[in-house]
Amino acid sequence: MFNPLDHKGLPLDQQIRNWRELDVEPIDPEAVDPYTRCRIITMNGIEVEAILFQHQFARNCSDSDVRRQLAYTRYVENQQQRVVNWLLPGVASVLETTLGYEQVAVDLTAWVARHEPDPYLKQAYEFGVLEDFDHLYRYANLYEMVERRKAEKIVGGVTEVMPGRPTVAEHRHPFDNVRDPYAKDAVDPRSKLHALTILSAEQQVAIFYMNVGPQYMEPIARQLYQEISLIEQEHVTHYESLVDPGETWWERLVTHEYNECWLYYSFLQQESDPRIKAVWELHLQMELAHLQQACDLLRRHDGREPEQVVGDTGLPEPLTFEPNKEYLRHLLATQVDLTTLGAGYVREAHERFEWMQQQLHDGQKPPSEEVIDLHRAQYGDEYRLETEGAHPVESLRAQEGARRA
Amino acid sequence: MPDPRTADTPFPTGSDVDVVDLLLTQHARIEEQFLLVAGAPAGEAKRDAFDDLVRLLSVHETAEEELIHPLSRGLVPGGDPLVDDRLAEERQANEILARLVTDGVDAEGFDAALVLLREAVLAHARHEERYEFTQLRAKVPASQLRALAVAVRAAEALAPTRPHPGTESATANLLVGPVLAVADRARDMIREAVRNPG
Image (cartoon, rainbow over all chains, first blue to last red; front, side, top):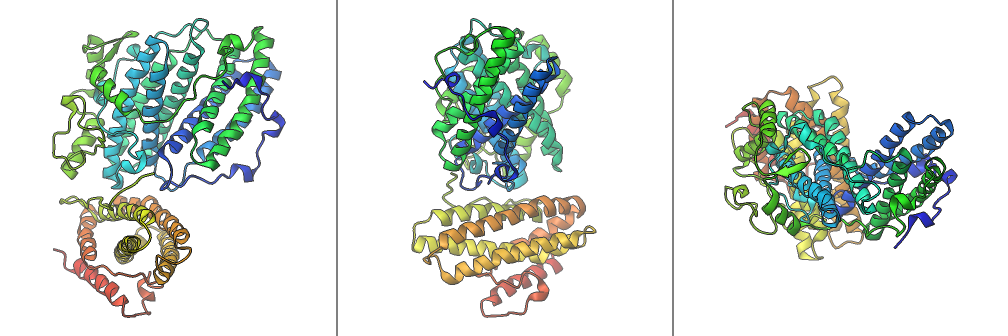
């Protein structure tokens, strides 16, 4: 398997781009492979995390030489983020991008859950994915009401749209969102990459929603973004708490750069659009050089070899965007009624959960329920895209006729 | 790639539906119809799909020229240049469309020109949704927007069948030809519906 540690990549002094190179042509929203959009959204989240992490590192680092090196790489990572995110077309609406974000959260998390070797970590992904799956359904109903369009236009039939764990039940006491971390020296290196990837994706979703939500005039749209952005914040807490807080800044830097190599390499393997593929190829070459720099810093400041952090066997199996319909239906059938208690999972609505629900809902229906009620009032039914038959959970089946079944 | 079999986004019904709801639905149908034309096999199927697209676009633009742009003009200082921009976009799209209609679906370069038309039309639609419809919903009384929905439904029934560059403003309506009679009737129906609602 490809081992990024064996490659030098594109020299750092050749990585600054000019305006012409930054001015990328966006994808055509009417003709794009939905998973190309997903790969763009994923890599945007990864680059945003790279930038935020390196800023935090710089604020906690007293060595001015290192701070200058970090500033340079961070500038390059910023240009990478601008290129990646600017592949999204201006003609798409905020809600269309939102549907793309939720499709990413569903199919990316499902893939990671399927490939996670550690059972406790796997459970964390299986738990979380059912919540983003529900958000996709809520936003799809909002989309049809506000923009009069069907979410199928965005998700393209590779991801189903139907209720997951109902958003109303996702508001937990903050104490119960804190998981136990993996042990950095014992865990499979794949698990480090999985945790970093999903926390980056969820962090970007949370930041996106908390900023774009108020741009809407429709009260239900403003309210739904407010509610779901709070769940996404819970997810950031949930996933970031899986990461061992004992990792040094130097090894975290190595893991970040290695993860970027893994994902660009993965997407390079499967990208259907040759123009976008060229971006993944170039960025992989850039990240290889960032990784070399991070490995040098690790050796110098931590006295350790990168293989001790990310292993010596090369990249794991490429992460792949692909349908996860059967897997999600299985999770729905078996885990939809789970909640968390402390660092574990339970089925009963325990006291702390009930307390939080009472504080927040206070006898009212939350926006995630209102949006479905409003859709029913307006259209006579709700928007769903159930390509594989009726919902696996009987109580979550559509009540009305089969216009969209 | 999304692959709709029909441009079947349902028109909303009910007393709360306003003119913006109907125009958004038309935008959705136009998006779907573009995909249908692009995906249709050459020959009669493509011709039929394209004819449907022409009909949808003509009905839609007539309604906007008659009802929406004049309303927007009076709303805000600076509303005029905004509407001028929209009319310029419509004119540009109409020119491409007229060429496609003249040359026919079998002409060389049809598919490439269709992509150009789609880009122009969909960007125009998004501009309206972002800068024009939002202002209408914020500043025009809801009852007035609901009343205007009646006129748009009237235009749906009496559609012009071919586009006519140069008629995107009421004052430029000088090139009256035989085909334009249909557009004129649609226009008359809209105006009648506005004068005598219900």
